[in-house]
Length: 80
Image 1: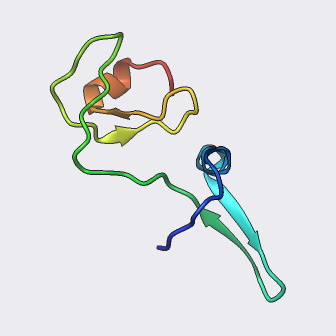
Image 2 (image 1 turned 45 degrees about the vertical axis):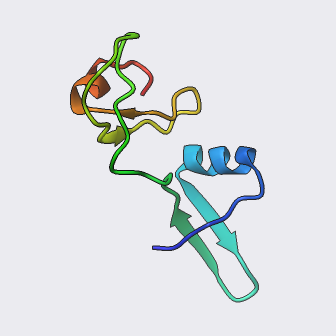
Image 3 (image 1 turned 90 degrees about the vertical axis):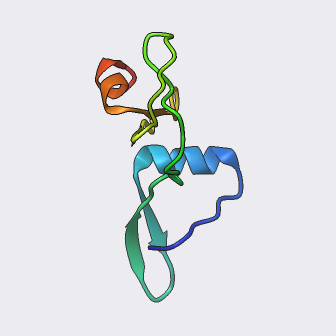
């Protein structure tokens, strides 16, 4: 694992949406998987405009979403 720092939010969102990033240097070329920074203690965003008391276990990487959901709300949410 490692850390990647992006110059701006647009670059970050593009990399998270693509899921992979190609690093090209003089001595090597490598494809790395990009995952958003995930936290263990983020509340669920809920589904269909309803509040949910659970913690978000799943992260939706769609640019229109970028939210955490519990298993139940993940199944109910059409964003992904």
